[in-house]
Each structure stands twice: as C-alpha cells, then as structure tokens.
Image (cartoon, rainbow, N blue to C red; front, top):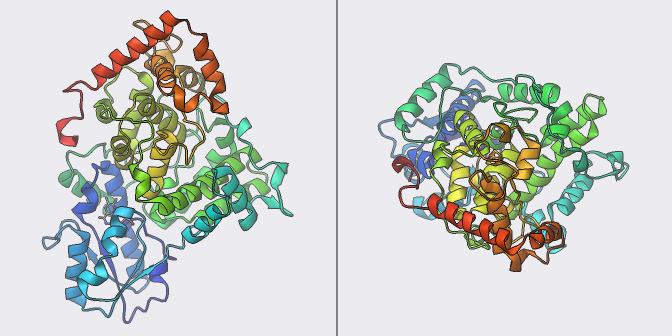
Length: 511
Ligand code: DLZ
Ligand code: SF4
C-alpha cells in the first residue's frame, strides 16, 4: 500500500522471486476519501512507482495497476478481486494497513475472495500495539512523557548507563525561543521531479482538478536515496538550530529548521530507528546540541509512537467523542486562505503551496483557531488529513482530535492547547503585518484570537477552571470587569455567527 514503501516491510519477508508477485494498486477511492492535497497524491503515487521500479530492479515480479489503466475499477477490494482472478494465488500476504478505514475492508477479504489472507504485523515502529496496551494496563501510557521515558529506557536511545543523557529527560524549556528580527534560515534541500514524478504530476492535475493545493512547488523526496539525502540535509542544516527555534514562526519561511522528513517517514522510505540513531550520533559527535537532539527524538520515539498506540488501542470509538460539543462548520478560509487574520492566511497559504506546515503552525495557529471557534472535530480532521503530505489517519487523528481540539476530553493532553493572540505575537512576526491588533481584546481592531480565547475560557469554565494548569488564565479572566467580559462575549458571538453564516461554507467543489 501507498504508505508501506519499505524494503523491510513484514509482507515482503521471505518473498520468493520465482513464485511470488508483489501487487500494488493506484485507486481513485484512496485518492478521494478526503480532497487530498494534489502534492500528497503526487507524492504517494510517485513514491509507489519508484518503489515498484526498485523491486523490479532487484528481480522481483511486480503487478502494478496504474490510476489510468482503463480496466482499473478504482477500488481496493475490487482490484484485489481482479488480481486474484488474474493470478489465482494460493494466498495473499499483506502488512496490516495504517488506517482503520482500510483495515475494516481488508479484514473481510478472506471471506469475500475465498483465498487465505495472512495479515502480518507492521513492525516498522518501536512499540507494538500489544506492548502499548500492556503499558496502558501498567499505567505507563497515561501521559506521553511517562511513555516516552519508558521508550528511552527500553531502546537505550540517549541513555548513559540507565540514566538520561545530560541528566534530564526533557529540555523543552530551552526550545521556545522566538527568531531574532530579520533572521534568515538556510535554504533547505528540495528534490527536482524526475520523469516518473512529472508523469504523475500531470496525471494528478488531470484527475484531481478540484482538490486542494498547488503542484508547482513539488519538491518532496520520492525514493529511499532522496529520503536519506533529506535526512542528511536536516542533520547538517536543521538539527543544530532545531531545538532553539522549533516553536518559532516567520512569514514567508515555512521550513526554518524543521526536519521535513515526516512524509518520507510515514510512507516508509525512512525508518524511525535509523532516524533516531542518526540524530543521536550527531549529538555524540558534537554536531548538534542536546536540547535539539532530545526534542527531535522525543517527536519520533515519544509522540509518534504514543499517538499510534493510542489510535490502535482506542479506535473506532476515539474518533466519535466531541468533549467540548464543537459543532460549527469549517470556514471557507481553511481552503482558500482568504482571511484578514494574517497568521491564518500565511499558514494556510503555505500549506496550499507546499502541503506542509510545521508543528506549531498546525497546533497553535490553524488548530488553536478551530479549538477556540468550536469547529466540529470531524470537519477539522478531514481538513488536516487532506492538506498535509505526511497525513495518515493513525498519526493525524490523535494529533487533531486529541491534541489540537481536546475532543477526547483530555486523554492525550492534560489541558487544551488554547492560546490568545499574545502567543502568536510572541512566537512569530505575523502580527506586524496584520490588520488586527494582537494586543486588543475588543473593538474593531481586536485580534480574533483574543476575544475567542477569553470567550472559550468563559464558555468552558465548568470543565477547566479546577485544572491547576489553567489556574493562571482563569485568574486573569476573573479580573476582567463585567462590562469587558460582556463585550468580549458579544464580539466573539458576532464573529462566530458571521463565520458560520450560510454562504460562508467551503467552496462548492470541496464541500
Ligand atoms: C492516501 C493514498 C492515496 C492518495 N492513494 C493511494 C493509492 O492509490 N494506493 C494505495 O495503496 N494507497 C494510497 N493511499 C494511502 C491509503 O489511503 C492508506 O493510507 C493506506 O493504504 C493505509 O495503509
Ligand atoms: Fe493572527 Fe491576531 Fe496576530 Fe493578526 S493580530 S496575525 S489575527 S494573532
């Protein structure tokens, strides 16, 4: 499958070139279950075609059904049925898919097709789902930080004689610096599309014309060699500064010091252990400081593994919760970037151009806005799943549903990641060019993040006021006089009513 492009994939173990055939399918069904960014589709299809070429070069037989094959039924299940008729195999072997939706289909194949189907465990992660469940039973997955420490102990990554390197598990306090004014980050490695990618780009432009996003700036790695090159670029030009500035945002600079390897990692072109090992080696060789390396490794060994364990332990119920009762439709500006909020326009505009935004842009700009504005989780989740090149549901859903929207009632994060314009103003240069005033709470120039933030806290007082991590903002809220609070609430209500008005929904082709 499109996110299983690893030579070490369990499904390929013990493959016999004389007897076995690798089946790969490009299907419209997978291209259309959300309006994926055109670059995301191009990335997956190009990486699939390159992977098939690499397997063939190795002497393996690959049956590859292309999107434009006239006989293609464009559905996974029907294409499997056609392939079974074509090859009359003794059985099918596959690695369990990365998404619940696909899993639901796959587990019916044996009964539907009348051939044995062996579903192997996806072994590309540090922690198995079974282990995650055992850790949950032992009370070690209550919070990511506890789980992460356990993973550090188990793997020995960034450990010296059973103790965390540097004497601390977490150096995040050093990782929250804003960029100096006028700072210029180095240009990052991008990959020029080859003939295979160019053909895919043309195919996507023709077949998915109404989907979100531009194709012009396509520059993602599509082969293992390119993915290793991208990793190398990060280790040299990103990692040394990654820690200090991982939360900073700058207009016109979407990449800064971020790794940019999530698409390759989630497709299987890189493995999590090799990426962590490379980062640790950079630290041990004195090429990058500990706060950067620990912060980066925590993303992969901690967060990525934690959200995957959570997804497979708690689906399908996990997606159904809506703890804060958020029901507003997703505003059109999430698709067309037409908003006077400069932070939102910048992040959404860059997302359209690159199918990318970094973690703070996702969490504290587009995610934070959706949280404060009470947008329905399912609509926000479909958006994140569609617009980012690295988005597969196992990783996207917990991050959006749990971390950004608090829709799981706090399973993933002990407090909501809600912030006012003051946070965005401190961590970015967006506000300087904005028509709103990042400091104003009410009035015609008030930053929407401000009145929405205080309105959010007032609305959910019963749920959050007793949370010690929320004590400070509630103390501030309690100091507002009645007239100011009334003005904040009225302005928020007015803003939200206009945002949700008929005609303010998504552009027709994306609804
Ligand atoms: C996201 C995606 C897209 C756009 N296209 C394909 C495809 O044509 N063939 C395929 O095998 N996978 C594709 N994918 C990834 C799947 O939607 C899904 O995430 C994985 O199959 C789950 O393991
Ligand atoms: Fe965003 Fe508010 Fe700053 Fe404008 S003033 S960029 S809306 S945070």
